Image (tube, rainbow, N blue to C red; front, side, top):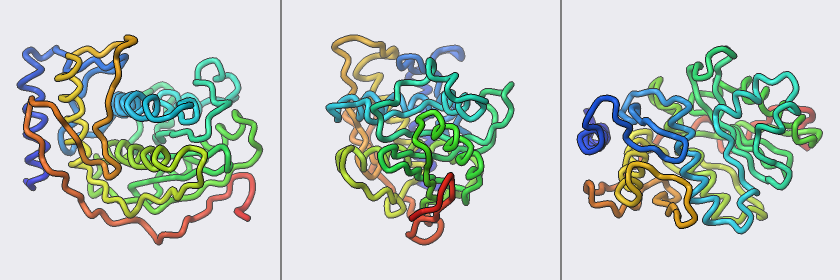
Length: 292
């Protein structure tokens, strides 16, 4: 077992010992999200894990860093699934958040095609759409295995937004080294891309490449465990909506943690040095038109 894996295991063991006195206890109820059993190494992330991280990023970054938070929307996996499976995207306008004033939309992509199995599929990837530039940026940690699913979602979103045409680029992306880290990698990719947007300003021109940032699955699992411990130390095991609740971010641009909790000792961030996929140039995938 590597040092990073031992550290993740120790964190999760601490989480269980401190917070789960009985097998049916909930570790943390964060607004509408709970249960985080699969933060251990080699455990596959489900919708709930990604929903928690998007909820956290939305409240700690988007709501606190932007004057107009509606300019960034982090669509939850269940919403993306509905969009992918919808025959008519306009039918979802009452379900999805308002997107009229949104520039950047984050969409976690899953290859589940079974409408009767809401948490199915075998791989997660990330699509970020810039509605101003009518451009989609696709990040896949397993050699673009979900690119067809991303194209489907992009086409449905294009129709919903009535923007006519959308160009989709496959972006160089750090690659996972096993079959179970795609979910945590999508969480860390989302953190990195979101931080780039927030730092540059939503209205500015952005370089959406993230390949230069080392993204480690083990460090991502550690960060999410730290985040849960930090939230519990500050707010208890149930975080609900109140006018005084402000969730500070503990995520730096490189994905490392700034944790002030005294529940457990902090550890230094270890970059994985994961290999990037492809060259630095974007690879166009045609949706409606070719790149000029």
